[in-house]
Image (cartoon, rainbow, N blue to C red):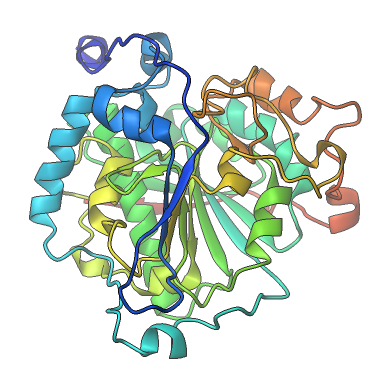
Amino acid sequence: MMRFRLHLLVLTVKSLNAVKPPYVGTISSGQGQRQPTRVTLSSLAQAFLEHGSNENHEEALIGQAFSASSKHLELRVRQEEYKRMEAMLDPPCYNVPGTGDKSAFLLGGISGRAEQKTGMEIQILASRPKLINASLNSWMLHLPKDWHVTCLVDRGLYLKDKEAWDAIPLPIETFTTTATKNAYARAAEVYIAAIRKTAQLVQRGQFKSHYYHFVDDDTFINPYPIANLLSTKHSSEQIVLAKGNPKNIYGGEGIIFSRRSLELLTTECMNPCAYMMYGDLALSAILQLGRNWSGAEFNTPEIYGSKAIKEMPGCALLDCSGQCKGGNYTGSPIHSAVYHHCSAFNLMTCGKTCEGGLTGWPDSSTTGWKPAGNHVKENKVC
């Protein structure tokens, strides 16, 4: 039954024509001041809203049913589902300050000042131990010392392969989800529950990192460009970095929140037990990032690969688009900091595209990064 339902969600489309480079547009506040909201929509993203993806990933959809990637899903269904959830979330759960609210900067931001350190909490929506082990031996080796990694696993999946999960030297949080729901809906419960929990920790003063990165387990992360970009920002400003557009976040490539943006979430209205088809789409409706002053940046070139950063040395920039199926949506083999839809082999080899692996970013032998060790914490969602 699951296989049959997934087939219904697949949209087969003709390849789109070549597209122009991404367009960067700023939502005006009408105040003539610096606007912290920048929405970047590539022409392909606009085409996706109107026509769907430029690839048919039916085989990948069936093989990766737990992943909540929007690239696999039928567009019309997602549009209708977004409208349904948006109508239910009025007002949204993300409290964007008004243009006249001076506290937006006095309390929430230090405009123009960068932080000396940019600690990151990475949480991985995980269903396959072999992918986590591959990442441990590839991109995680290059993480800065003050970046931390946790795996988020559906409790049922954890129990089915408990020995493999317990052998992974990372913290694991399991989530008991609704057994009667399909794989996408259960993943959505984990997705929203984990983000809500992190926001609650921030609001209680129990979250020590500056940024929070939520990503799929089949994603390769090059930390160098991400750290470089965040070093120019300040986590006390509302910042949300994502792939896609305000009504259709691509969850697989990951979404990055600043600490301030998590403070602005109304966690009481984030209900992971509500019916949600897909976690990233539910998050799109919860946040509604198209509003002024949301701090949202979509398709940020330094992370999502619509331009190379010339000042970065050697293999600090990678092109793994030929290895990982969904690495680049711009239609060009351009460097990206994240590559989605990677197999375990791809995760291991992507960082070795250049002889010697990643350069320009020190590895764990010099940064001191170490996995925090395995300990399992159980969460009940509903």
